[in-house]
Image (cartoon, rainbow, N blue to C red; front, side):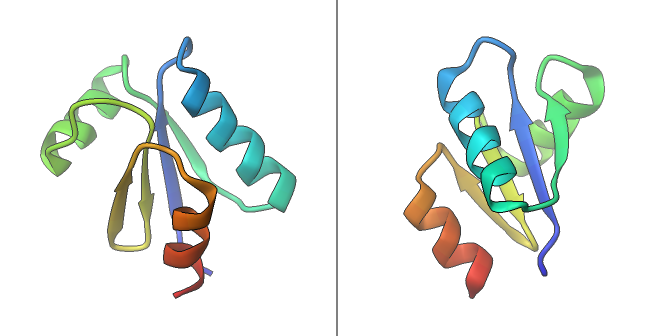
Length: 75
């Protein structure tokens, strides 16, 4: 299984949808708040400007789309 990191902000509906999807599938992930220093630094290092962002193994996915996530996660 690939390691998954989910970068979120607390008021983002797309972030909540991504979290609910991962939880429903039983996929383990590290949740990282984009407003906290560590989250901001990691997002900046990846060149991301908004949330949600998922780091799936060594790939990055900006925005939330379940089908795209499944493709990356299963590949």
